[in-house]
Length: 320
Image (cartoon, rainbow, N blue to C red; front, side, top):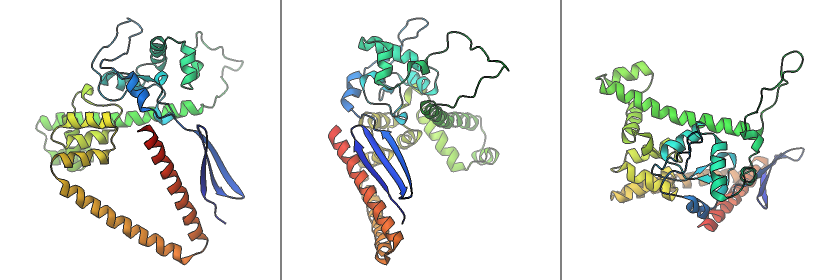
């Protein structure tokens, strides 16, 4: 008998179990704290990064959301000890690993009037994982160190860093393509040389030209958010609104179309989605009507999906 996936909450911990009765996989995931009031409390107009070598504060204007020292993808909470207000350039450097996390932890510790270790404890980062060894490690006999498996935190951090590098690659591609087109290269010929379609080249170039400087971009938003904004009459306005209101790309596009008086397009898309939903519902209904183990499995999965969706909506309503 196929099993489903179940979820229940115990305080901050969400427990998931998936699989059949004879082979069950259980995962315990600690839910991150989402608190918009904490984000607003640490938001400032000017960058709070302080160069540890010179002691000079950046003080460049800040746009968008504060930086999470422990990233949201790694389970970082929306608490003041995990948040610092950074300008666009410093925010990007922090995500790329060019500003050390221990530096940001110390700045927050000074701001909150608490110890470095206390900040690490509150955001669930081990201080030892952030510090460099004070002296070279002595090699054992044989000259080789025993292999150490990376921790979950290290693997998540590595994944997030790679993800950030992939995002940054789109900006670099756009910059290079823009420069080549400006030099007089024909778009069709360029597409054949770089292995991309002309549509892809136009898209990368358009987004880059809308936000050519790093300070104009919002690091907390995806490249796709910037793409939606680039196709609007006022990219800077809409990317800032998306950051302030934490809009999805879909919500951004809807807001832009409504501002442009194109409600008919919004209505047409909603109508198309409604028809698609009705088609899916009809297919599911026919499948369930057949009965059997597969139908029971689908029914159980749908119940779990609906429950998780309702819980997510309740959590969102609580924050509002």
